[in-house]
Length: 53
Image (cartoon, rainbow, N blue to C red; front, top):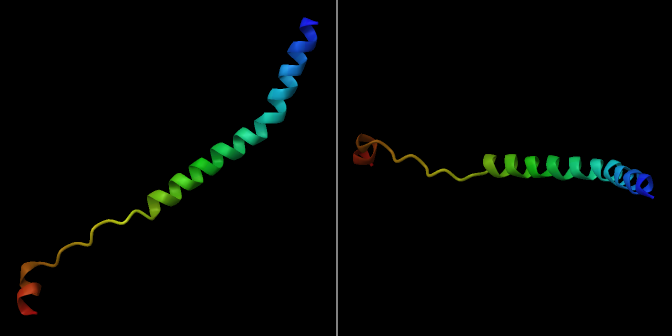
């Protein structure tokens, strides 16, 4: 009985491992995408250029 529970939990863990890998990889991909699309404020032009306009 105890051996069956151990085998069942091990089988369940082996079945869920690819799902966990996909979830972690997708979270990393989303984080990387969000970090690359962050809107930084545009730099203000130097005062000389603003004075010429």
